[in-house]
Image 1 (tube, rainbow, N blue to C red):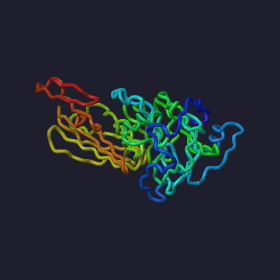
Image 2 (cartoon, rainbow, N blue to C red):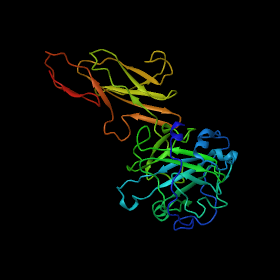
Image 3 (tube, helix red, strand yellow):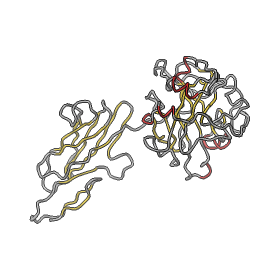
Image 4 (cartoon, rainbow, N blue to C red):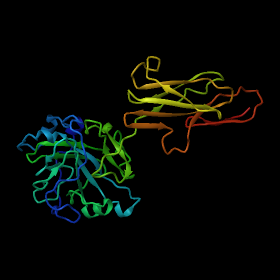
Length: 361
């Protein structure tokens, strides 16, 4: 809420063009839709009314939004395309989604901050509807958007653009009541890769508040997913660094931090033996105690100079994660037990993200 209240309260209109500009859908229409189950998402207002009051110009009439309008939210922001594909480096779009189970009439809706719709009255045309589960997509360059994605955007905000450094984007209804507002950024805690590295900024579909940076993630697909369901964000997973090289025969406790309710498996192997899978538990015996999001499992002690390789697989609902991560060149991480000095042994090697060296006697 503090971020919203500190956001910009307006934006210049700039040059505008007709909603019939090249690449735009012609006239009032129902925009793209996707199936949604009734009652699949609870109605949550994403902007407190105190924030709404702060964002509406003084003296403006504030008409209450329709009840089903509370299910409409800013869902995806593509504000800085990668320059790796110069032909489409100028593409940008903003997607709004109707998470509700009923159609929503968005006639006359506008953006009061961030971008400006390129129509004579700066609002969406009369008769514009977002179907239940459907999307409304706008772009700053309709022709370029159509060339990239193969379909026309629903509205244009040509003459304005989404800031590469982050800004507040505010959607209001025909009566100037705030429907949704997002103050995005290109720096942590917001995902940083959408700022010129290829992906868009996508809202986590299982979250309830799109004003929070933690509820957004970088799209899995380059150039985002306009008018389509957002990608499923990876499960947050952090592996605790081993405390040090364990002595021969000494058990080693490995930890992982993940959301409470996750299922996590530790898979390890000693030297070139068979893989062994053990569950990592967030119970009373784990560091910090039960249900604190810190999971632990024990790897039995290995012999002198033996390499213990391990990996981690985690899941929670439809989300999943692994360590080493997908795409990492290492199938395992690892540690090894040291060889006592003074003993003549062959060279044994250990490698891992934390430890990487050869132990020589």
